[in-house]
Length: 110
Length: 117
Image (cartoon, rainbow over all chains, first blue to last red; front, side):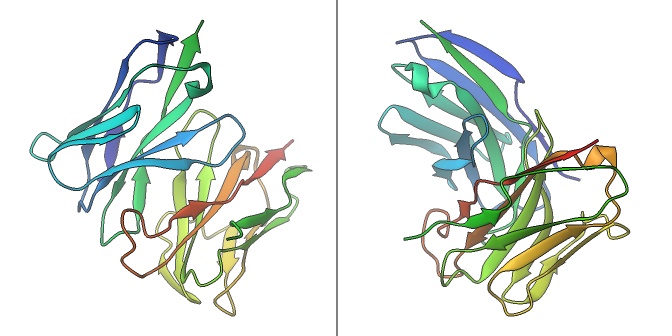
C-alpha cells in the first residue's frame, strides 16, 4: 500500500525556523517532492530529493533518508507569506506518478 | 509559457446531477493527470493519461466518474450522478516525458471547486 504521514498543523513565529517532517511507505520510489499550496490555489513545486542528504535552495532546504523512509522540509527566516499547506509527495516511477501526503498547514504568526 | 488551464473555476450542483470539468495542459506536455483534493487532505490521483491513452485509473470510481482525452491534448472529467462526498477541488496537472529535472515540468492548474448540495 501507499502511506505518507505528516503533522496536520504547525505554528511558528515570523523570523523563526520550522521543520516539517514526512514519513513514507510506498511501492516504488523515484524521488520525494515538496509542494507549497496557499489556500484556494494550485500546489507549486518547492524541492526535490532523490538521493540521501540535504538539498538547499535559498530559505528552503529538504532532507531525505531513503533507508528510514523519512524526509523533512526546513524553512528559515519565516515570513508571513509562508503561511500555507506543505505537501510531501513521493514519485513512484520514472518521474511522474505522485502519491501525496495529507499536507501540513503552517501558520506564521507576527 | 501559458499554464494549465481549467474551467469552470467554481461549480455548485445538487446531488444526482451531472457535471463536467475541462482541462487544457501546457503545450507539448504528453502526460495529463486529474486529482481530487478534499478539503484538508492532499491530492489523490484519479487518472493519468499518456497522450490519449490511460496509464493509471486505479483510483477512479468508474461507476460514476469518467474521463477522456480524445486528441491527446485537452481533457474532460465527468461525474454522473454526483454525490455529496464528491465535493472537492479537482486539479488537473501536466508534465513532459523529456527528462527535464527535477520534476519534468510538472505543473498544476488552479482547479475547479465543486460543491454538491
